[in-house]
Length: 505
Image (cartoon, rainbow, N blue to C red; front, side):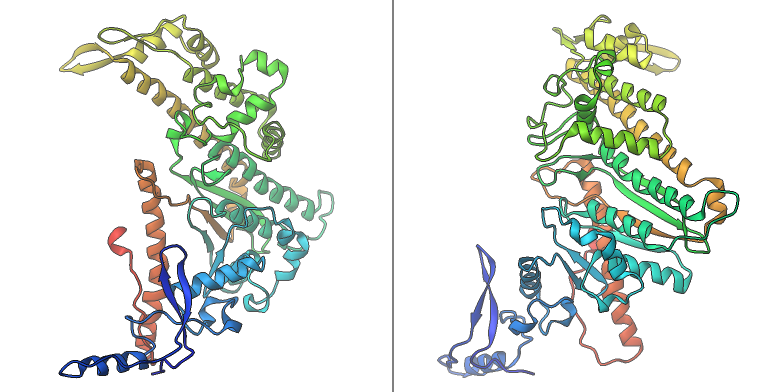
């Protein structure tokens, strides 16, 4: 039991800064009451540095910016925040906390951290032999897979805007560039060329998935609005042979509504900005501010991003994953149809609503979708119930009809998104690939948790998924580890941690 001597440094709560540093400069005895219990209690408290009623202690200055938080003498909330803050000020965005890597978003491009030479720095190295880095975690997963012949998973989680998607992208790039080229095969393309082509296809999935599944939000210019789990597949020679993607809970509501300062999915702005003049005429494309599904956020541009150039990158990625130009044209036609569908004007009448089959935007959307405009208009503003064989037709109000219109658009877009994932998997996880599959490393890029004044059901599901991940973390880092210490009768002071299990049962 250590003592609080003069000079002891501690953290004190502060409403503005969270915590501020302080130092014990003098010890005074408090005036005792009749039983003198006050003096005794005070003296006892100052001798116990683990007393929860006392401020958390500061670490010695030389240890405050430790590379691994578990090396801190005093592991408490302000000490952790101070360590990360100091490292961030030193332009060190990575810090270990045991088996976990904490990444702090630099909100700037730091490409020098991920150049091919950095891959070589971490290849074949023990994690603690190099500075904390994303590549060290990837290397550990790779070596564990080789040593144990077991599949591995890297989980990337955190708050919305923390940089999860970029982290997942660089982890994938590490696996794609880590391996050594194979030997040439007589009479055919070299093994190295074949592997690099597969790896290029895997990396090309990123621009496609980001274009169709990412959007600008108030916290992040490139926020993933879906969860993604990608399995990087290896054969017995540990060469990458393919990949498979699973997606979760695409935010369909974003297609028809965006809050202020936010955007719809990137692909729509790319299409409007990057379409050729011929495509613009064929698809009747209007400026962004004239499409209802694109102008609600009031801020359609992203600083430093050229949507036309991004459109070319998306098309190139499509070609890399073997989506033909004719199929690409059909995809873009479908996107244009959704934009026109959002511009369909439903008129309110005294009791219900009306929609003419000759409404201009409806005609454009139906022509692209291959639908009969009259039939489509009818079922936008009417509903039919069947009871005991009898069909009952009723009219919808303008608000109800708008919901129907938007529901059709959301269904079409989510179906297109699922189809894209299927197309990617069909090309990267063929039967031949699955027959050669020996092990895989999964990379989970889960959507970020957020807290709004009013959370949607989709946001509730996102937050719940993150709580389940946190529960898994608690289970491995705290519960199972400490249970092992108890079984082995190790002298151990039990850590009382905040368990979120009640929130994620």
